[in-house]
Length: 211
Image (cartoon, rainbow, N blue to C red):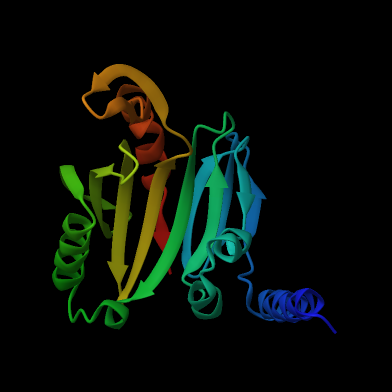
């Protein structure tokens, strides 16, 4: 057997193993339709309502494409949603505080902020609100990427019983602007369009419940 065929066989075995892992470890998501034009996401102890025309997946394929095999095995990604116009998506994740070496809710939040700063991100705004008896920490964050693009992500973090539930609202693409820097054309997400969507995100967040 030549090297090329051997490599294909090995790749096939790895892919088969991943698919078997997905089959037995993929999260079970419940998405029920409501009379008010929304659906209910329910998985891993967290539930919330979202627009009925959004699409939903378990997030497992995203992890496979990203090579996040640890995420697959640990089940940190509970699911992902995409807006009807495809302009942004929502990733739902769950962590134990101990995964971050945190011993309290505030310690977990502080560590996340430190990690964001280390990844060349700027926290544009923060807000804390009480929803359904839960403390929800909201952050709007700007990321500057190595390829001279920038984008914003809206985070909602809920911590209960030593578990952290994180909702990330992300733009699915960046758009080119007319701004030209010395090193070339600056590519950036249209911030105003994304920020105009924040009320939609907050409406989803207002329906969050944690078991």
